[in-house]
Image (cartoon, rainbow, N blue to C red; front, side):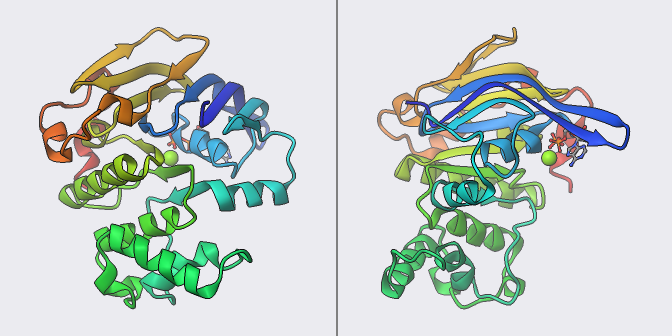
Length: 285
Ligand SMILES: Nc1ncnc2c1ncn2[C@@H]1O[C@H](COP(=O)(O)OP(=O)(O)O)[C@@H](O)[C@H]1O
Ligand SMILES: [Mg+2]
């Protein structure tokens, strides 16, 4: 079973008279449990691809399957329902509600879940705040938290629905390098512990280095696929018609390696990096 299957997907945007081809003939499939980076320069189609996987937007043509279910042709309400139960989102700018506490922000996606009691919700919120290390900050508002803490709240909020997939669009872009690295390691620990599939976009080389699967997009097309095992990347540069990004992360790491050991040995594959120098500047923001 594939958690995500993308079948000959195109996405066009109409910009006045002009048609922008944001994605061209993308075919990919991901196994559950992957920790996957979508890399590529600015404007290459990363956000568009994440929005399609997240059912926030629909393809111009082609099909997307989530847990082997075709999501095309569903009504906006059906898609909203699918998102609410299956997909957690993490954004570059955290997108927390400023008037709510950390705990209330995390609880928010559960509020319309009629099948959960208040006590169940509270318990779930406490569990995920604890997972991201913020149990003591439950009553803090976002403006009383650092950037890294805000992103931790956002991670807990993404996880609270127990999603099959967490999508993160440049989750470290607004964080300093050290904090960004901590956020990535936290995401990776959760990926290992809960087996949640993580798909995140980035143009930061150090973030790519934390992934165990890589899809590089350039100009709306797949340019490169990568897979890391035992710390080494193997890359396929040719553009296959059917790109299967398989093996769950846990299959790579039978013994659940200590994350730090896993991190020290490797760097991002050089081919995955931008040629325009974007990576080198990414952590200076
Ligand atoms: N809503 C939109 N309307 C028109 N063009 C868009 C829209 N969203 C994205 N694009 C265009 O699609 C291409 C891919 O954009 P995007 O997916 O945001 O790239 P990335 O996230 O890699 O920077 C770019 O050329 C961008 O200008
Ligand atoms: Mg983007």
